[in-house]
Image (cartoon, rainbow, N blue to C red; front, side, top):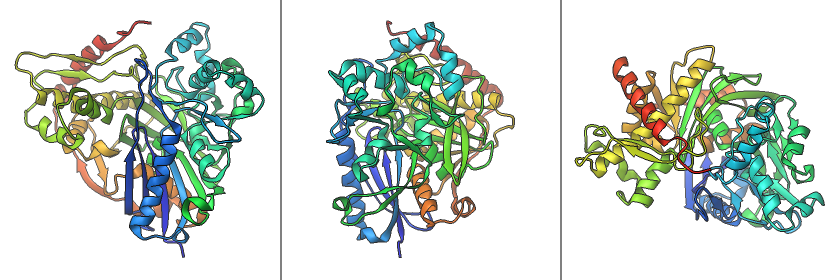
Length: 495
């Protein structure tokens, strides 16, 4: 009898694989970083084959390390970095170019032109998204225009487009599909009609023959080629990483909120069973489709979360490992008046400024590496506080707690400062691998490994609750200083 679900958690800087048992506990985990490519300022690319080979290696490693035979695995669930755009040859499975990553800003000018032509409202009304280079549509259009022969081949049906979930499913079992949550991030999918939108395909000049079939989030889409694991395993759960994390956090009731502290930070609120409309520049997105019902979410996206700490490590060199940032930041009592705005790839919600750039203000001769490290950690919390403020304005009911997950959620300094800024408790679950866990839950529900959402809710446990302790006046003062720093970062890059 199968004892495990295998979750593939394909992220922006690394691929991970985790085996979960029936209690939703991690049995064994493997992770492998892969190269990032920055060919020009504002460009971010991945080799899609690096994504595939690293993900396959991790999956094989967890089975090997856990002494688990493929027959003991009930299903595979996939959670993936969203919006990143892959185009490959339908016959050979070879990418025609590097994948353009969600952080990439090369199509900001194209978005400006579309906005000037008055298309932003159509896009927001149909997709729930802001017109921004973050999403897949302009990335795909760029590849079709700039890779020799790509448009003609796409028109002939020789190419496949997909977000990273599509790419992995194609490599694992040969099917060209995506789930509703990932489709809703392409800026080509109508979240009301639940179909690829003809008007948007025409606007972006995207041939429909390129597009994957859209499937529900929990349901078998295929079985893996036997060569990968020695035996075919059903692939039966797919969700974009942030929707998967929301599902893994058991945020199934309207008004529940989770915030993931990964490469970026992504705050999502369950919005019910109809697409919400934001008046504060948040995104309406599909959460998942399970048992014939579609759940919708309200989302705020921060582009640089944990990646800010990576910059301290790789760019500035003031730490050697990411885990060193917390003790360094705690070696000073505060940031010494320093504010770091990590707008290295522009600003996401609620600003949506692709031309903002990273800024450090408030430094003096007394500023040290520790102050900069503290300002970097605090910047993650400031950005998330802006999201909750916008979310509270959009939502009909007040937020009572925020469930936190992701790698940086293990940083106690960050979690306490976050609770102080939000003014509501931040709750860290016992299992912080909620992105992978959500993909596992979706796959397991499809196979009867778990029977219901109620069973999944019963498995959720809190590990620590961070209560706010900062006076309201101090919170307001700090947020005002942050807003002033953000103003300095805006509209910096030439365009």
